[in-house]
Length: 77
Image 1: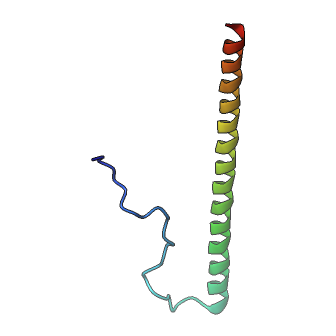
Image 2: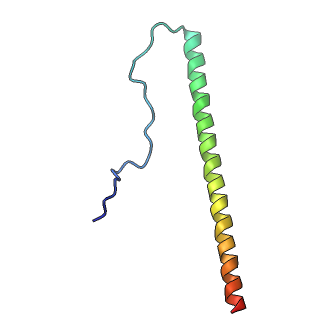
Image 3: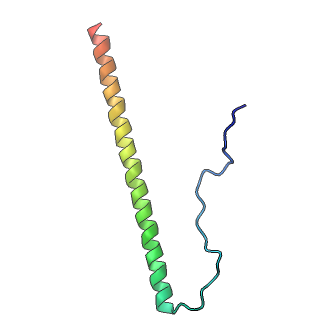
């Protein structure tokens, strides 16, 4: 048996504020805060997508580079 630490959760769960509603915030402040949090989540998703795309391109480059080297070795011998 393998000693993996996988517990079945492969997705991140959304963060939830357990502190409750802050009654001191005015409506405009609450709307502004929600908009700021949405913007932060959107930026995080964009950074994640960029990182995935970059990793994909690097893997593609390395795979093609290794394949070309292998073909050179096969052709030369």
